Length: 371
Image (cartoon, rainbow, N blue to C red):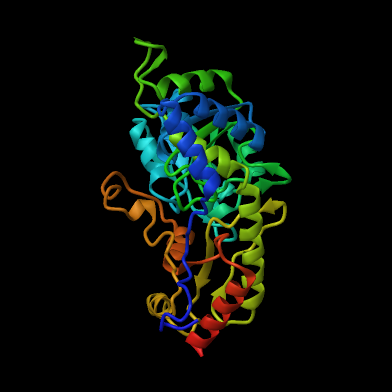
């Protein structure tokens, strides 16, 4: 692969959609029922079955799924919610949207997820919930986090927006409790835009269905404050097709990640991601660490990759606590592992449209760039 355009650009993300998705959209458009309707109901049933959850509530995005989940569990003003500082900002923003106060604890450098021991130290008297993010496609330590939540009487909400099909000790994330997923186009499966909340709590399920539709369970009768968070049947129709392929997509991601990890062995200062024992990583992102002994700094390395037709990105260059929005909200704790990760991570392409030959070509390009 060279910068001369001889080969196709290696994209970091590329949604795979085809004739089946187009046919599904056409079917819905011809039906005349494009708002939340039978396609959305069908998608909810099929997604719940796929991940093993009793209930699924489809909404307009992963962010609105998180907001809905917090409200459905009665979280609001006067409550604090603990989460990770190393995540897309929507995780923390949903806490603010609910009127609650965010708290942060540092991450485990092995999986980039919330460190249960640090989380326990950060709990305050008004803490009502923990949002555990399954970052990059690898489950957080659900065993320890579930025990912590149970012992302290807290609600555990899983932010699985990057982890469709990830597993912890054999079980799918979102199998128990409440979890939220995103279907943004870069995710492991897409509906164009959309999200879903899964739960085993019947009361939370009922409240979520009202919240997404202006607080109404009977048309024009509004019981609580709600929002227009509905998923369209157009989005749901795409999702129903994508759901039949997400396991295949994840297998391709895992295959590509395994191949790339093997091909990058021995490069000084380049730390490849690890699948921890008892986890099944679905590689929404293949995030390497650029350590101090790597031959190039991260910015230069990115520029060289781009010149060679290879996309890359930093997820995420700024922790939530250092975002301008959060500056001045409070005195945030020192979070050294999160800050180090933000300075070192770089995402490389392993998306399912790529092949093992692409992974070999990617590794060869990296070795040539640093030589």
